[in-house]
Length: 228
Image 1: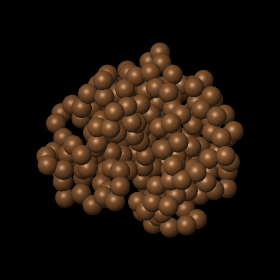
Image 2 (image 1 turned 30 degrees about the horizontal axis):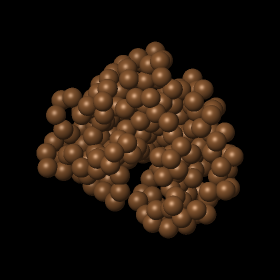
Image 3 (image 1 turned 180 degrees about the horizontal axis):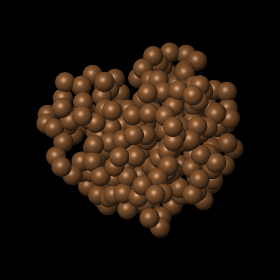
Image 4 (image 1 turned 30 degrees about the vertical axis):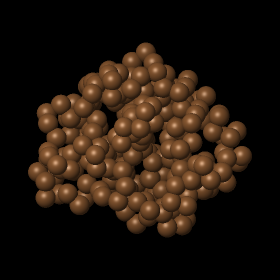
């Protein structure tokens, strides 16, 4: 299984993005995925970035951006066919891997797209992570390349004053499975699921979406032990 993330320097100050991330966030995510993958012989990890490639850990596949924009549209380059390869799981940098990824990876077999539901329980609204097969990524990427100049100024896709790739994906990404159904409770939101208690043994992936980040929770043993 390939895992993909992105790291860019915003050209304008963006909420929850500017002045937070550096290459070590990608390195930690890479090491977490590598530790917990169920198939190490077929594991790979890619980052699309405008950072110096030498800053990334050995073993990370580094891809430069094709487009000049440095905002949330940059995250769409995770779906480039050359980045996805035969198939990949897209993760945000503020994701912590704390347990076996076997159920997450198993759900991706023999399908084109697996998605994660919004943790605020909005019906069939996807959030943050997704798996795409190589064939599906090509279709989605071609759709994005054709669509982006037409939608980039459409306010319905905006969040906090910026175009949100997640809002575009929610309208255009067609999924066949949901991790929420295939492996319930294995992927959890810090904001929604875990603020009142530590994760149980079945949790493998914790994601932060918004202002709080794992770096602010290093006093919690389960964060500190896995943020390496």
